[in-house]
Image (cartoon, rainbow, N blue to C red; front, side):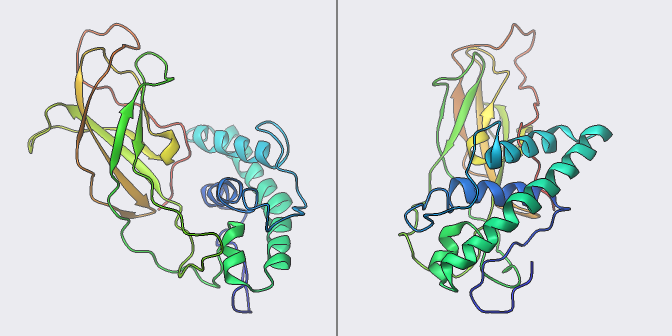
Amino acid sequence: MAATHPNVAVMHCNNQEPVEVYNLALNIINDGMYVNTGTFTAIPIPIGTTTTGFLGAVTKLGTLIASAKGNSNNVNARDAQTVLVHDTYLIPLLTYANTVANHNLGIINLSGFDHNNQPTKHGIPPTPVISNISDKKRADGEAKINLVKKKKAAAGTPKATPKVHLKYSARITNAPASATSVWITELSAVGSTDLILTDLIKNNEIAVQVRAEDGKLKSPWSAAVNYTSRTSASPRSTTTPTTTTGTTPPATG
C-alpha cells in the first residue's frame, strides 16, 4: 500500500500474498499494537481467540498455508482467507495505526507495520546461535531448538529499517558432525517458536544446525549442537534421522 507522506505506516503486501499477510498479522499480534496497548489504547478490532476474530482468522490462514501444497481445495481456501485477513483486519488496523502515530516513526514501529514507501533491502541475516535443545513439555521423541534471543530495543526507539520477518531452517546429522557428514533437512522455513524436532530415537545422538532466512537471503549455518533424545516416538529399525516437514507456512522467495 503506497504512502506519500514521510513516516506513514504501510503494508508491503497485498491480499494475493498469503505468507506475507500471515507474517505481518503475526507481527502485529505478537510484537505490535496488541502488545503496546499503552500507546494503542483503542484498537478497533478485538484480538479474539485462536478460533475467533482476528487471531482466529490468522491462525486459520497459517493452517491453510501449511496444508495448501498439492491440494487445490486448500489453495482456494487459503487465497480466500488471505483476502479476509488483509481486507477485513489489516486495512482497518493500518488506518488506526496511522491515526495514532500521526507520522511519528517510533509509534509506527510500535504498531507492527513498516514505515517506508518501499521496503528497504535487507542484508544477509546474522547467523543464529542455538541456546539449547530441550524436551521439556514435549511429546515422546520431540525436542525444541531454542535460539539465543536478541535484545529488544527500548519502547519508542526509532528503527532505521522495517522489521525483518525471519524464518528458520534446521538440519540434522548423526553426531559427531564432520566435513563429510550427510545432513538432512528436518525443518524448512518455520518460525523461531516452531523449531521442534520430531521422530527422535532414544539414546541416538544427533548434531543440529540452524540458519536464518529472509526470503532468498540465508545466513550461514549455526555452530552444531549435539543432542541425545531421552525418548523415542516409536520403535525404529535404523538410527538414521528421519526427514520431517515443519508445521508453519513456508517462506516465499
